[in-house]
Each structure stands twice: as structure tokens, then as C-alpha cells.
Image (cartoon, rainbow, N blue to C red):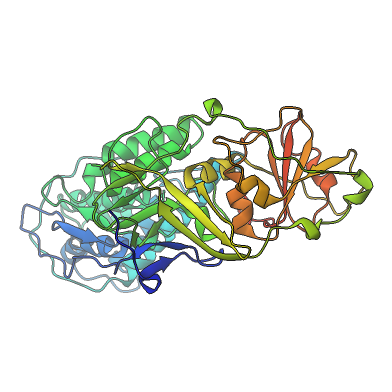
Length: 476
């Protein structure tokens, strides 16, 4: 039984009016100061790290190399700066030395999202490394680091294999490059990658090399297929909570020992397609690991109840946003676990909305996430022309309060317009509709902008309002 929590102790997500989301926990790592490695060993102490602390934890590898290279000759770039230039090139997405290169134009938005994420993370990691203060290191450190095909820039080929260097220093720098690449890739699933708390078992592998198999699997999907929500979530679980239960779908988020991982769009703003967000909260503090799984494991086979009756509206009357039919005012939004009589590590999470007319609804977060991923955006147009056909206008509240179990459709086809001024209501509505032909239209747009968006058949559902253009999947 989950005990009630005072609202002041509940975490609020940024944006969308501040959704209440579980019991707030103080995010903190257990890492305090980096260890001085033994002469023939380097790894990380077991504990919980922020990404910046991991960068600092890799520091003894680089510091030993810089120390053994000796003083820099006059009028030359310092060795430390030059070696970090090399790491910057390894982490870049468009250089000869790149460990994860992308073509200039990436038409697939799932890959483009990862491309932008990789570029942002790589630059941040190098910035942290340049800012890192000198800590303890072992001048006699000498380890074997298997070749990982991380290339050197020409300046560093001369530095690492020239007169200043020694045979084992390339081994140390290779390990440093590889740990930085592994960290960049491990953070790819997370929008707020700098806040994620990462548990490390220092006895399991050197540094974060234990992530190599999951990294290889994710990058194979990235290169050979389109990135999927399942692949992003699977990678995030491998990084943070590999002991989570398994299900057919793999879930869409989870609670682990140091917080929760949710779809990033729940924080509003320019929304992402697949990225996740670390949140310092727990929905059930009595449980260590909980996988958030979908209400419908396969939306295609879910029941499809008929949409509630709406109002037939002539095309000439649909030239402007039908504000008189918009949803009642929201009073409160929150996320919470669906009550369960079973003690299980797999639960459903729902988005709960309370309105000023006393009505309350709950929508499966997993289906909201699906609906958001599969929705189409109305095509931009400067002209607000007369729509080519009539439409049926529905109250969003009627959709959300539909009494039947399943995902709403319209057996007889037609164009169905659902107006709302609330971004969170638009998202919740996405979770109630069958996610096949749903179009998002900004409030200041015209219904004619939806005619070539989506699929070329009926029924078509248009959520009008609650969204603006922006991001990969709209701005909420």
C-alpha cells in the first residue's frame, strides 16, 4: 500500500503547468573524491555518479599521460589541451576521428534526434574535462587497453609516438578516449543527460566497459534501422537498472533506486520523439525497481469503442478555432501508479486530470506516449482557406470521459475535430484515440492545413489547439 504524500513533498515536472509526479527525493551521488589508482590498475570506485563526476573519475588516465610527457616545449599547444582536442574530435559527429559519424543531412527524424543529442553531449563532456581540476593520479600507472579504433589527430600522432612519449602512454590515452566515448553513448537516451545518476559496480568491469554490449546493440539499431522507443528504453535500462523485470513490450519508463525515467515530452516545451528524462522522484518509495508498462501491449488488438456523438459543423463555420467548445479549465494534473492488488515490479502509470467542473480522468501514460510518437503535425500554410469538407466537432472532455475500455475510433469515418486550449489536455487526448490518423493543429492554424497531413483515409482526428509548431513532435 502506497502511503499518501503531502503535496509539498511531491516533485513537479517542468512545463505543462507543473505535473505532480511522485515523491521527491534528494538527488545525490555517493562519489566524493577520485581514488589514486594502483600502478597496474585503474577503475572506478563502486558508487553512484553524475556524468560530470564520471568525467573526473576518468581523469587519472589523462593526467598520468600528461605528466609522463613532461614539460611542454615553448610556443607549442600544451599536451593536455592537445589531447582533449583529440577527444573532442572523437566525440564530434562530423570529423575523420569521429566514433559516431553522421551524414550532414539526416532525413530520418529518429536518427536526427540522436545526432543532435550526440553532438550536444560530446561538447559538454569535453568542456567538463577541460574544466576538471587536477586530482590524484599514479605516475607509474601502466595498463593494457585493447585497441578500439579511436583515431588520433595528426598533431597527437606526433605527440604520442614521438620523442616525448613512452610506449605505454598510448595505452592509457586509448583507455581515456574509450571511456569518454562510452559515456557519451550511454547518455544518448536522456534529454537532461547532465542530471542522470548512474550506478557503477567498480568490481564488475574497468570503468564503464560493462556497458559495451548494450552500446553495441543500440548503435547497431541506430545504423541499420530506425531508432525505436523500445531500443532507447532498453539502452537506458542497461545503463541504470539492468535488473528491471522484462515484458513483451519492454515498457516506456521505470523507477530505479535513484529516481525515475519518464518520456521527456511530459516536461513540455519543444518535445522529443524518443528521448527520456531523469526525474528525482519515486512513485512507490517502498519499491526499488518498477517497470512502467503499457495498458495495451499491442494497441492494434485493443478494443475500439465508438467516439461519442459530436456536432456536425459546416466547412464555412470552421475557419477559426471553435473556442466555445474548448475544454473546461484544469485545476490539477498529476502522475500516479494505477492501484494493483498484486505485488509486482511491473505497473501502469496514469496521467490524472482534474477540472474545475469536478470531473476527473485518468489516461495511461504509455498510450499517451504512443499517441504522441505516432501523431502527425499539420502542414504549415500562411493561408487559412475554407476546408474542403464538413467535420464533426467533439468535446475533449467527452473523449477523456468515454466509459468504454479501449482506444476510440469512428467506424463510419469522417473528420473529427477536438478543440482544446490546454497542452496537457491535447496530450491526454492522444492517449485515448486509436493512434493511426491523428493530426495536431495549432490554435492559430486553419483546418485546411490538416487535409494533406496524416493518412489519406478516414476516420481522421484533428486535435485543434494545445500545441504549437516546434521540436521533433510539436511544442506543448
